[in-house]
Length: 117
Length: 112
Image (cartoon, rainbow over all chains, first blue to last red):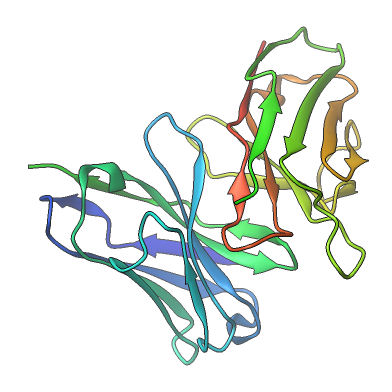
């Protein structure tokens, strides 16, 4: 079955960097776009970034463009999110999410990122 | 960006009774391929979201048939024919037609 397991969350000071990872299994990773979606405490879901199946294209939410970079390794079946210049408003649970034609069909369990001094 | 507006934001329900959630988009969600990429997700407390419905009315595998989706253009509805205890949580609509960005509704909290 499809599994998406995130890691790398933690507490980080404002302005610092953090890198999240997601290990995928149970499907042909190299055939699907992948996303990061976040959820601030008690708030709604916010899409963050998507990367094409082959890594050739990436798209970002305005709130993170220029600070976050999404990447993937189709040999290791991993998705990453490099987060630089972190702000308090980036505090959230970050989910690794599999794309499916105009939709998101599988979600990981999430990893919590807390940006605080 | 497409704005997704859900109502109500809080929905008190009685077990065994029906419930309905509305989702409206700021522009038509019909894509050039003829499909309408409107999805519904359910998030139980402390859990990740789970997709229930895709392309307006298609239920995911394992989703009880008491859940149904309908609508077209800019107006969509998720209906629960008989609310069960495991339905508590927050329901989100999401559009995948006009991206980036993908956009979600604010969420509707189902309370029993």
